[in-house]
Amino acid sequence: MNETAGTAGTAGAAGTAGAAETAETVGAAETVGTAAGEARVTWYRAADARLVLAAGHGAGGGIEARDLRALARTLPGQGVSVALVEQPWRMAGKKVAPAPRTLDTGWRGIWPALTAPGLPVVAAGRSAGARVACRTAAELGAHAVLALSFPLHPPGKPEKSRAAELLGTGVPTLVVQGGNDPFGRPEEFPEGPYELVAVPYGDHGFAVPKRAATTQEQALDTLTEGVARWLVSSGSLA
Image (cartoon, rainbow, N blue to C red; front, side):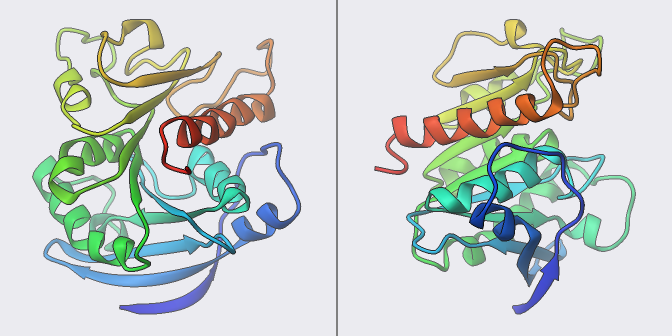
């Protein structure tokens, strides 16, 4: 493993500033070898961490996603170290994500680095990364799962449901879903042993239209505040 200082990319706005803003600006990048290739973990560490939230990216982008950056900016100020995980395929410069089993292999290989601080780890991810977190949570001993923009089904194909992955995590689970997500709107999700926070007007990337009754900043505040409340209510930050 190799750890160096790195600079974060541009993120969408969120409501918390000060020390948390500084935590989001510069992270420590750690290279991790896995059976699927070389991965990278960028750490945004809390001064007195009680928990690690490890978040993987989706199949169409990296850790620059606005939701991942918002969490990296806000949670360290609340006792949560955030680890943003770049899968080997992304590190290798490929534009298309590999098969789910290869994504799972990469995530398994990263896990020892995530548990190294000796703290409980919440497995998180957006879109395809959320599916990985759900599929592997019980096996890896994740404390809980955070599924951002869970792709319940391909756009326009509700009959091809992936609900079984979400319903089978075996640990406390939170879904944060945009109200206009074509991969599954909040009202499409089945009943199950998980909680759900809806982000009004948000699309699959939690972007909101300029004409919406809520701003982009308010949408990200809904996301980060919902996650923070859930971490407390689920006992993760007891």
